[in-house]
Image (cartoon, rainbow, N blue to C red; front, side, top):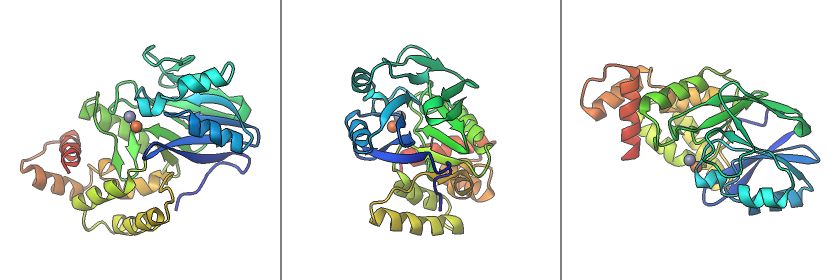
Length: 263
Ligand code: ZN
Ligand code: FE
């Protein structure tokens, strides 16, 4: 199952926050970069415990559970870069980025490219590099983000952007929604053997209170119905549920997302 893909000198740790958020922390022995700090206190505690200096914040979208800690962190750490979506609507962002921009993080020796992935929100971006993807609330293990602002077509396109990354990409999602998502995925594809096997692994991990994340893109392509709208079994299941013919993949995705919303 997925393991950390970074070289030994960089570690990516999940800092749990709220009920089911993970604030991903990329750190070496001295510096830390956090993604989507919805809460400052667990980040400050983690940095203190591991003797780390906070070097930057990355933000994927404007929701409070991803941005709520910015104020306290920037007032605690001097001149802390906060890199996130453009638009000026997120207080505390010091560097706005858009599709294709390169985010340089010299203190942890990493560079990430920005992917625009609208759907969950319109401002949603993801950070990709070094065989890793920090995707916020766009993709979850066995699921995807709710459509709060974008259209199903936008989200479908965003997920396809992710799907085209190398299958070895390690995906760092922001929420531990995996078991509930797997329960839904099994309703869509009860005979998917990879999914049945994954369900057992998730149950095992969660019974030990261990995270099911990160996950591999290769795994998601075999188990995540939202990346499988082109697969006959998924299409037939969604058509049966919707009780209508669905002309294209976006229509399948649209009904699949609605089905999950009401599941
Ligand atoms: Zn969100
Ligand atoms: Fe969230």
